[in-house]
Structures are given as structure tokens and as C-alpha cells.
Length: 272
Image (cartoon, rainbow, N blue to C red; front, side, top):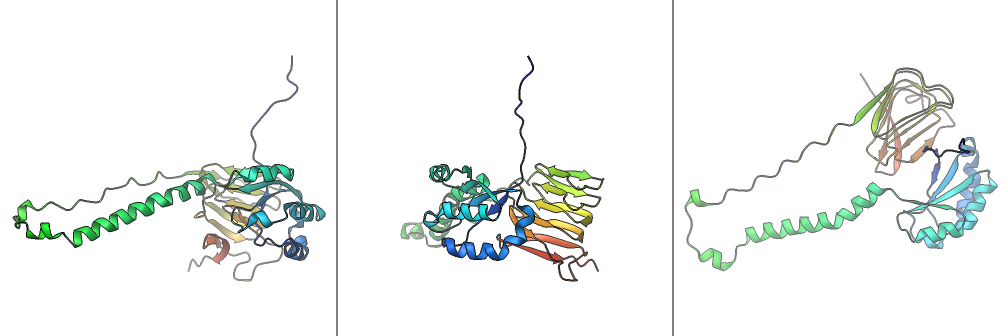
């Protein structure tokens, strides 16, 4: 008997919305001003990211979701690093998405690193100020002095894989370099999309969308020979272009990267 359906894994594009205020009225006012800017992405699902919002529990999530729906957008999930928000998501008919695991792991390691640093500082202080008993001890010959411990050498990180696409990426196509950098030798057309967990290099015009650091790598960058993009993203932070960039950036070679880990910056590449 032939199966009625099959399950297959897939990746879906979504816009991540990060409220900066608990004031639903202020959010509505700003959205009213910028709704047209994002209208071309109304078909994409929205994920409400509250992980960085202070006092997020004071936000009227139902009102915010209604606001998005009013402008033709569909909220589908709530994102937070704490599992307590799973009940809040269900109460508002949203899926729950856990915040970036790598970020949570890094935060979990910080207390251990800080403690280790303090121990090292305390040890250094103890060595610099020996106890009186140690001062009264007879001086040892120079050859008997313990040799300073050499710092341990850490292995260099393994080089990331690289995916090379030699053909143009045409409208409606999507290319994803999972766990790798992406090099595109042809044009990325309007409505096309290139995605990579690492860096993206496009040696031709970028007229569609480019998303680097898809797995959360905030150090990822996008290098473009001719900047004409609809959208660029690094580690989930988007920037949409509805108007032409300034002359020193439009149709020029540029680098797109995160500045301060929070804001996308587009800079000209001066090859001279």
C-alpha cells in the first residue's frame, strides 16, 4: 500500500522581530511608520524574540500579535532562552523556539571562566607576596629554582568547509551552505537567496538576499562585488533595502558585518 504522506526535514525563512519596548502603543506607532518597508516580506512567518527584552513579561503579546496580523503578517512562534516562556507561547497560540544554543552555552561557561581568572589572579598575588615563613627559609641555589610553567598550546580551530556555486542564482532559487562558507561566482538575482552558516563571498552583483552566520555566528561577514541587495542578514539581524544606498556603496564592492554584535554595518571595500 502506497503511503499517504511522507515526513521530510526542511528549512523555512522567517523574520525575527525583537521588540525594544514593553509599550504596545509605541510598537504600534513605529510599525505604522515602517509597515510598508517590510510589506514585501509579508508572506514570511514572524518569530517574536523576547530574549533580550527587559521585563518581557509586561509585554501584551496578544496585542502585538494582533498588530502584526492587522498589517498582513503571521506570527508563528515565540523565542526565548528560558523554557518558562513555553507556556506563554502556547497561551497565545504560538510555537516556542529556544534561543541560540551556542549563546546559552557561552553564557553558561562565563562563571567558570571568571572563577578561573580569579583563581589565577589570587595565585599570582600569593606568589608576589610570600608568607613570612617562606621569607625565613634559606635561599635555594639558582639551579634548584622551579622552572616557570609554559603555557599550554591550544590546537587551532579546524578550517570551515567552503561551498562554491559557479552558476548564477536565479529568481526563486535558494542556496544554503550548511556548516560552511559560501562562494558565489555568478549573479544573485532579485527574489533569489543565498544562505551560509559562515561567510558569504559574491563575486558578482547581489540583487536578491544574502544571509550569513545562519547558525548564530556573529563574526560572519558578507562580501559583495556589486551591492544591489534586497536584504542582508548576519546571525539573524536583518537590514532591508528599499531605496538605493549612497553612491559610494551602491553598485560598489562592500563588506557587511555586525557592529557591536547588534547593528549591521555596510562598508565600502577600497581595493586601491
